[in-house]
Image (cartoon, rainbow, N blue to C red; front, side, top):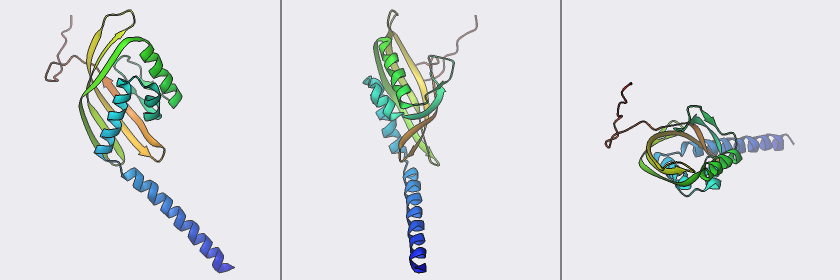
Length: 170
């Protein structure tokens, strides 16, 4: 009986160690390429106006700044992110977005993506707009999927080579 108990405990300890090793290996499996693939899938969903995919790809987390508002944004749930994406698309006569430049890296178990995108859109009842914006996203991935951590967008005036164009004080 004692042998069975120690064998049972050993089996449980081995199973626990394997589970921890697998989840750790999964987290360590993040690569610049996997971050790029995920980031491109997110941009593709925005370009397709696919609110469900946007919610799924950014299911949890995300606090940061968009270029349309000074106030930070936080999305607590997938459903909230889907509702926000739907409302955004519903406010537009048209909307197109394309990533112009994308860079990725991995620091520890966190994926980083940054670059530039061009957005062409027309809010209902307003004139068409075109903006070139910078972005940065921090991502983590675990067994439940990708999690957006802090993110940032800004739409400063840039020249054709991507340099900031100063705006004089009047």
